[in-house]
Length: 188
View 1 (tube, rainbow, N blue to C red):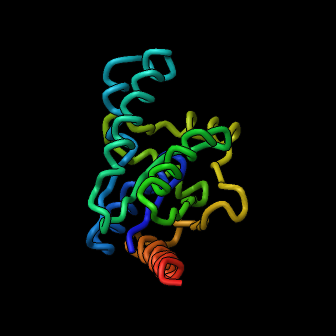
View 2 (cartoon, rainbow, N blue to C red):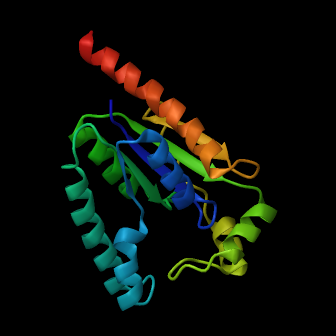
């Protein structure tokens, strides 16, 4: 059975790399990286400006609405950076799973500070954070969003010593269990 997998983590921990590995392992899955709706806003407006926020919100809503119509047998893998104050965004992701009538697996990726710094500062992708000083400030201000206990299945993985494929395997195993539980609930 399909599911929605939301991979959350600070910039540079490997969300997109793990998401790509997970889609390869799952086979029939679609990857929706948060930069799909954020990059146009980065290109047009100053980050955090009202115009930037409005465009991100509008594009995200459009993309999330379209995601509901993906083939029912396909799982959706989303990457996001959700801080502790981003409950609204989490509810939007949960709404995709609800409207698709599939389980939601919430995943938080972390890594140790030295490794995080190494990963972040070696990135060369446009519109991605690469300055450790900026990330350090974010780490001091925010924590990652976690769903309420029992709200959805939640998995936390420290990727410091794991490859993307190993991390994806751990996520795929839990997703498979969720699919089996949900399928059994449907037949009961």
